[in-house]
Length: 587
Image 1 (tube, rainbow, N blue to C red):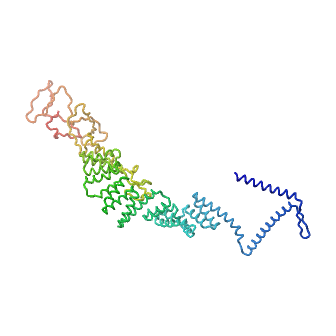
Image 2: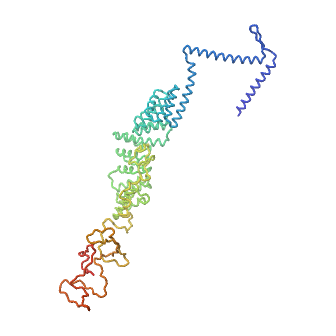
Image 3: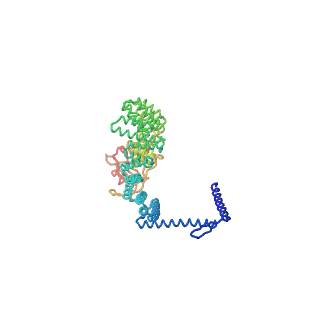
């Protein structure tokens, strides 16, 4: 605001000075007299000033006309500089306009239009470092990979565009899947611009893919020195790279360098389980059991893992179960409340045949967090305590469909890997594996087509106190038929029986539902009669006794020589010779 006020005051001061000067000139009585060639010109002061201004304008026009005449004369003698400058300005305007439209076309994804504008810009502009860059981007947008690679190679010839050309070729090789050549180009681009963040990340990723662990450590160190990575993240990733470098050195036979690299990796990142295991095994190879135990105990206190326990057991491989339990108390005590510590203690007690102690160590993990491991330990405990086979099979059957527990899971794509690796097999992420329990169906075994979920109903309950569960380990024997159950104990059974002649195949319509008692009856009960007397079965030996005739002279009672016909179902053969029918009389 103060500056504006000063500008206004200055303007008024200039106007006032001009006005005062004009008044002073008009009041002056002096005249300006000019004599030339016998002629005299008398001018007032105001006229003299106006004449001076007109003379200045005329002089400027004369100089411009002389310049134009001089340019025409130069053109006539062969100098085209002036004319070229005139037309060059017009070409530049058209070229920059086409360049701007081409950049907008690239940004909007119109590859064909971008290529046309790039060609037009190259026609009007004599700046290949700009037009070639636009042409390369236009070729990438339109999908013309061959043309893009050709233009990027042309950019390598200019120092101003060499980095752009190398970076463009690197991206093309990455798109083609040629990681080795892409890594070489990334190294060249990194040498041209070491502080380029994108090139640093790309180079580090390619070095980890190609297994150049030493070069990856150098790149990681540069990123840390430049402040692009936090200190803890850089230390963790450097430990991972040192671990892989140690593994390769150990494979080549240089155990000393491998041990030093593994030890440095374990010290830099105590929660890096593979580094601690490799360092401990290196100490064991050197018979340094104290440092091996110390590094494993430190890792167990940070993150318990079965591989750590396995390496701890390798320190003294031939000890007794009781001595191993005593030695492992120091390892378990560093993180006693962890689930892995409870499982490890239960397994050690199982090896020592202390089954009640194993049950106490396991606690309620089988109910709160049932996994294949916890359920298998419970089955072993039940077997050791002498439980029924159905109870043991019940625990094992639950393990068929239980969670697999913690595994190596990628934090980026949730891929499950069988063993630890610095790079994920699925997404290629670096240092993204964590020992955790995956979510969803990835942590479950595949569904069984035979219905494994129904097996607990068939083999028995895993609970030991369930006394009502039948033992299905032996086949069930059918009960022999006998007399009907007393009234009130069991209702009569209903059975479908076909009504057909003997020897005929029954149809679906021939079946009818009948009530059948629990006892099998081979002969139906005779209809009750009031008058006739039912005779018993005939004697096997002796002559027949005469019978009295009835009042009407006809025989009302069947002859003792004639057996009463036995009605038998046509589709059932009576088991008259079975053991259970001996010494029994037909009614």
